[in-house]
Image 1 (cartoon, rainbow, N blue to C red):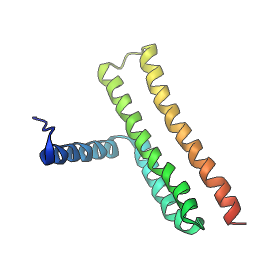
Image 2 (image 1 turned 90 degrees about the horizontal axis):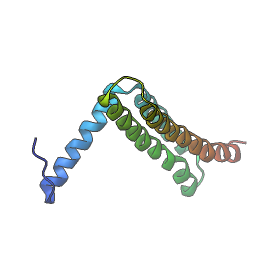
Image 3 (image 1 turned 180 degrees about the vertical axis):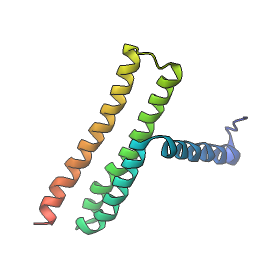
Image 4 (image 1 turned 135 degrees about the horizontal axis):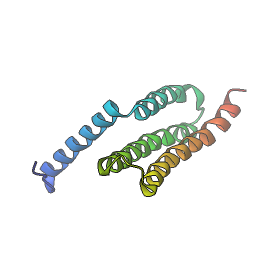
Length: 122
């Protein structure tokens, strides 16, 4: 597979690779599917919860972040698994760190959503 890296052809090729990555993550990673579904539900709810455009941006931005971080976490897990399935401390650490990144994204989502919900729905 030849990768074009210049001009419009390169941009179109990169877009295709990105779509392939999203498709692979959707098909193979249950956590990614769960994050996408929860984010979609929260995205729809954001239109009812937010009272200002600033609140809406604060609610929606971390939803994009969780998708990005979950894609990166899945990529790390796949690379580690490609190297081998036998236990190695560094492999376990890499997977745990990716999981921790996803965990912190959910904390950021909570930090954004809880106060806005509290202010707007009381």
